[in-house]
Picture 1 (tube, one colour):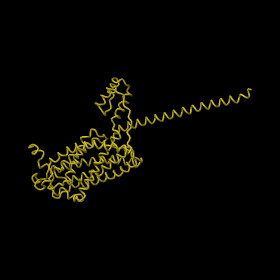
Picture 2 (cartoon, one colour; picture 1 turned 90 degrees about the vertical axis):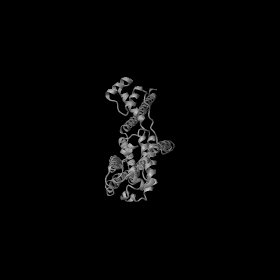
Picture 3 (cartoon, one colour; picture 1 turned 45 degrees about the vertical axis):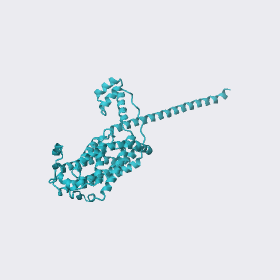
Picture 4 (cartoon, helix red, strand yellow; picture 1 turned 180 degrees about the horizontal axis):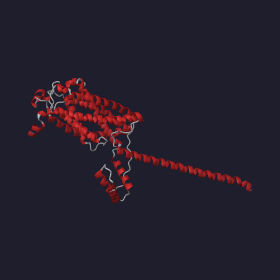
Length: 397
């Protein structure tokens, strides 16, 4: 503990110059934010994981069936211990040419059969539509409740309307009970997302999602210890304002409600671009980077907090680019073909299989039509021959 007090919890790191931990406890009293409060977020994260398990099976799955979510039937691959061992060890990487030659010799399959086996094996690991619906449904419920709770707790606060109020009396500002739990619940939720990242649906921005979760956890934890709580509540509210719209659009997309999905996505795109590219930099970052300097001198926590906000803003720009690509497709192609954050290789494989199956179906239909046409031609020929022979019989007589 002495080492932590000497290195980690040094007041020069967390508080402005001239302010000590004793000053914080004397002024704010029992409502003073204490670093040890953050340990409560870990059992909250575990509770979220258990609650999510129950919610998905008792509520999300029946709701998916009610809305019409259907999972595609996937044909299992032919059992091959050698290929399975290689796949489990190197997934999702494709085997190289030398490895492909070795696998062909070990399995006794042809090269084309091995490629076919790996393509179908990867498709078996793809999450089903029901799985993706349940994940989106869980996040939708949390983000909607979090946004509603945050808005109700902040709508009557002066710093919600005037961001200069975030620094009035800083850092000796008491933390209200509602904002205390707002912080811990949000922090516990992002801990649960980080702990479940290996089992959740992997998308194109998988690495960016991990960076986002880690940056958010550090941002919430540091802002609480440094009593940046007023600004932190605004940051959480801005993020939750568009997240539940995105998750609701995903839910209806998996259910096949294309018009509803497209409408929700347009609303989400507008809200996201306004809140993340306009409100967040002009109100939040401007407040912490510039307006705060009117109250205190820069310290290490000032630079650390603003660096995390800039990391989040860089991620916002990246996601805004993906969203604008989807909006472009929606405006000029007339529909949203797929989520820009999805795994392209897996989607392409399934689309290829669907195209092949559709061609097979067309081939069967064409063959049946050709056979019926051929049989009808044969019958017509036979009928004409019989008619001609019957017309000759009276003359012969």
